Length: 131
Image (cartoon, rainbow, N blue to C red; front, side):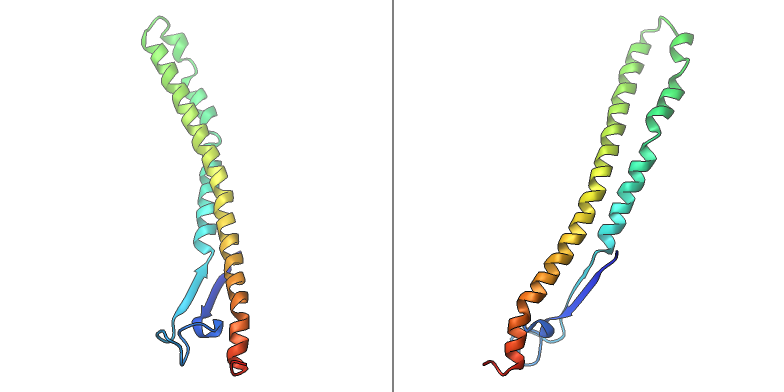
């Protein structure tokens, strides 16, 4: 999806062109690449955390049977439940974050296009001699 927007300020009718009040040659740059890559990373974490609960359950199989009567088992169970909640919360957050990061990329692109379009009358007036 990587949309890259690059617009010279003079192309937008703003400062930066010849005769403008600002310095020349400034570019506005936007790329959704970092947002999309971050979304992909969040999705990868979401996927990687998927089997963790089952792996944790498997790792704890037989612990109770071999150690019945130890007071530490209750603590171990509480710690295990705590980690399970944390993994599930992290997994949910990563899944949600991926969508939000992609939304940011889309919103920035839409904003860039809207700003560009809003300068069209200024640029047209400049080409037409300011009439």
